[in-house]
Image 1 (tube, rainbow, N blue to C red):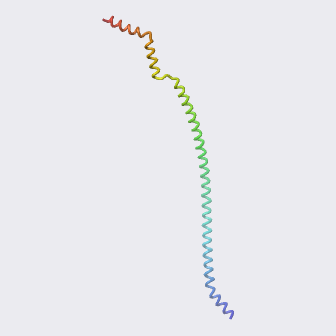
Image 2 (image 1 turned 90 degrees about the vertical axis):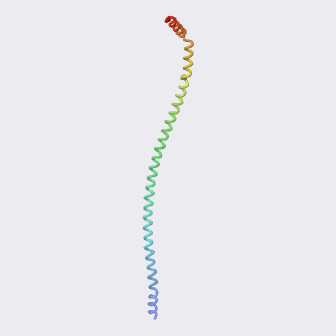
Image 3 (image 1 turned 60 degrees about the vertical axis):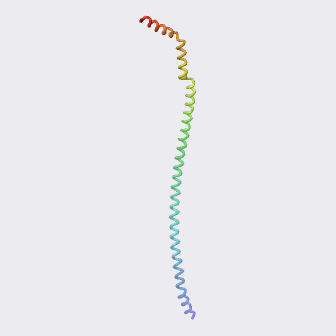
Length: 129
């Protein structure tokens, strides 16, 4: 009887074993798919990181160039400011329009030709009559 008992147990356990094996196979397939996805994502992340590092290097170079340009512009602005200050100092030594008019009026008052010009006009008016 033990032989018959073993067969019956095998028959009863066979569907359970088959169910367990099916689940194990399904889980193995799922695990392989997840591993493939993980490798694909790892590859994508790696290429994205490489691309990002490349862009960062490009940006660093561009920022360096911009800094150099800004420094050069700062130097030019400082030079222009100094030049303008010097021009303003020099302009203070120039005569203003009002100063020139005062000098002209003073020269007219003290001009030796002025009285003659007035006398000539009187003589011309008397002689013409």
